[in-house]
Length: 206
Length: 206
DNA sequence: GACAAAAAAGAACGATCGTTCTATTCTTGC
DNA sequence: GCAAGAATAGAACGATCGTTCTTTTTTGTC
Image 1 (cartoon, rainbow over the protein chains, first blue to last red):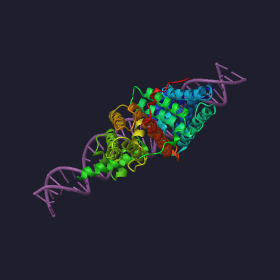
Image 2 (image 1 turned 180 degrees about the horizontal axis):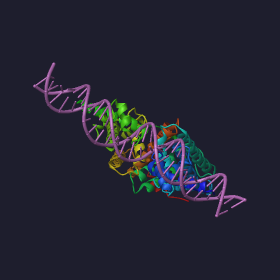
Image 3 (image 1 turned 120 degrees about the vertical axis):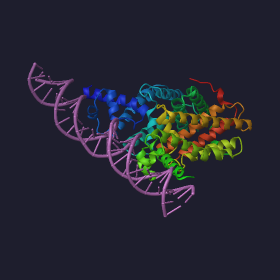
Image 4 (image 1 turned 135 degrees about the horizontal axis):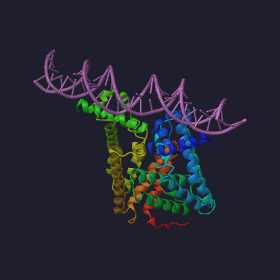
């Protein structure tokens, strides 16, 4: 690895850590430069613009997420065990040293949801990929006979995502001591519900 | 209402709308001033600092949330009807004209979770109040015989919150057309589960 | 170890930020 | 309608922002 690549890597890692606590917009060239032991212009030689830095930090976050969450889960047996691994590793991601300020995607989602541009486009695309990966994991669990055949696997992905988002909210903002336990109870209830007969027939009352 | 109060009110309403799209940190004195038809210094006469403006905008958001979500729900019958009203109005809040950029609390949560200060303190306190209100609504539904007597009402509050957070994520970021329907299906499943025998006994497998 | 190329530093730019000051305009009570 | 006071405008501050330029240092190669 050339010196350029090594420095580039270091910048992105420090930038990712900073962005997780300060947000993508909170990233300042001077701040990242200082953290990486560079001057502003020294850092700037690696990027076309601040927008470019933000985008590359987002890409780095996706890379790390795949390393920490996705890849290990794919090495687990198909079906429910893999779904459980996805959930467990996903919870762990939020406390990973790669993102000391908590999941960057949650922070970026709030920042970018009304700001069009390449960063938003990339975030949306990667989130859709992730949702499809979750739905696929559920579909495999159906094929394996672990989940009920009529389970709505897209709804499963939505429900799983919602548990994690609430965990992030209670853990990071409210510092709720039982956040993880709440998430795990919700997950077990979801698994239970996914095994049983289709609960989709619930008729809206009132 | 004095002129001062009227201007103050206008500033906070425009500030709230701007903060919902740009975030609390994205609020600039110059930007809010322009939106309110004032000069920078004219606006500044109403606030001690930018931090003060942010805090007061947050307070305004809580006031509006109570008007739009909480108060109408409390006028509904105790028990499940009130729980349903809370959920419906909460979904509506995210599309209210008061917050054109989506729920400010979600945006503020991501921004403030690592930034200590009065704004964070206030957000955390108001979120805890809201969680207790949700748990109380569930407890009342138990008392009314609508929900199962052994339902964990704090877990119910967690589950309800998670549905809304996912709705916000899918609706605001991914612009998912079925976001609302997904949220409603999840809500019906939660209600169903809250009526039935306690599902807490799910034993972690694997 | 000299030399060419690559990488980083340093200085400076215009713009915008939050904030403070003084001057001006508008409201309000008589 | 006039004076007193409140409300706002305007100008200016130091700081920081992203960005560009030139100069210096470092790296890798024969």
